[in-house]
Length: 556
Image 1 (cartoon, rainbow, N blue to C red):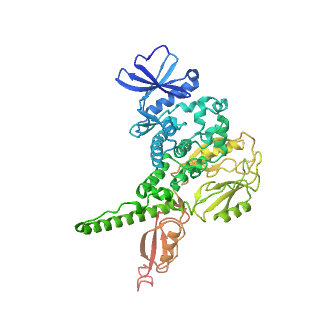
Image 2 (tube, one colour; image 1 turned 90 degrees about the vertical axis):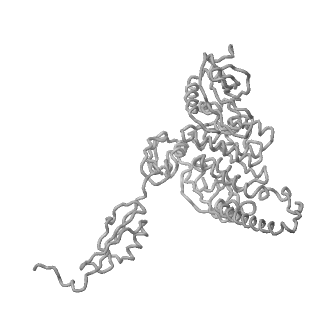
Image 3 (cartoon, rainbow, N blue to C red; image 1 turned 45 degrees about the horizontal axis):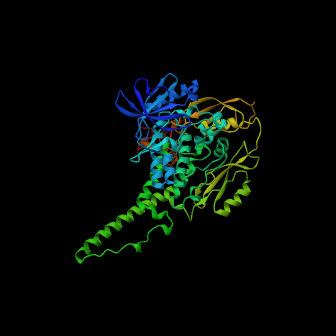
């Protein structure tokens, strides 16, 4: 570099780090009189116009993010062939350095860091920014323990060809790639969640779940292998924390947490219960200090009465807290842990009968789901399951399995009820493409496929585009209004409630034609569509008053 001053403003002071794509310098901003970090792209990337275009676009978008757990981006610039970003200077260490120094982190510290990173991702995702390279090297920890996520935008330019090249530039990132990134498929918010799940695994164990001699072998592990349970390496962890990692790193995007906020909520629940209960409920008995080892407290006679009252109040409080925790734990599956929890086997590739025998032997129940064409399983064999393999469940849990109809070229698979992004990947496995996407009003979750232009089971040429309709998630649940005419008032009420509505206004009118206490009319027409929960108004016959049943009022 011919100068130590960029664009007449940023004075480079010293090199403080480097990665596969850039070198980082500490610099002084002469205009604002403050120290900053400047990341300068390596020359080979500076020659790639497409990369530079994406890099600038994504970095400028990231510059609009303001969050305590995101490294602020101040500026994106260029001087000659030098392309750089100006960022907040963080005094601290990268998470990768901390893991290297400590070997592994206490699970409470790991939960705290993961929650902070998830919070950063939450804001980014709400602004339609996917990080794509969540890894310990890109997570900086300040001296006060605040986690800050860096390097938004750079990873967008990394393609599956980069993996095939086997360069050092991609070697570090591939350890944290989601299966869809490793395949070069569609990447979304849940891809970042997968990577964060891998980071959480590494914080707890001190190592990545998949490793190899080259990027391709590691990428294949992400595609084909399941992240091993953390409990195989580390003892004394909350059972729910292991389930969090399992869900975050599921091979299928649709099975992961739907959002970073959902992951944060799960981590917060773990944090809460561990703070109240403490470590002893998770560690081995030999690791926790027994009550008998504590030194007794000698009380004077004048303090005994007060002490007894204090003990009573504390005991009562503890009982209330524990009761609440037990209630929460029951809902969350906390206490299905060591003795009661069962690890769900991998049933893929087995017949239903074989899998049912295995399930019964370990205390699970098996149910058949759908029959679907599969890209990897022969006809009659299980192709997928819910809950996924290696999930921790309680005894008696029902596992639903889908049975393969076989591998048949040219047959259109069913993508109904899939998220459309997952549907795109699934269609590609069968040689088809996703066509037009039309949003329609529906009560199903947003972006769920509700129809497809070519019916499942029909044949089509390879490369055919399949148009779909997806739910907007805002549709009203419309139900059919029942026919209430002539029904007894109580029967009519029951019919309204049974149909999914509520009883509205009930008026009474005299009628010589309709028997007393029966429905004369209804304000909402029978057979029409009405939003679920709406009120249905009816008019009930009072019959005729005494003396008025012989044609009173006639002008004849």
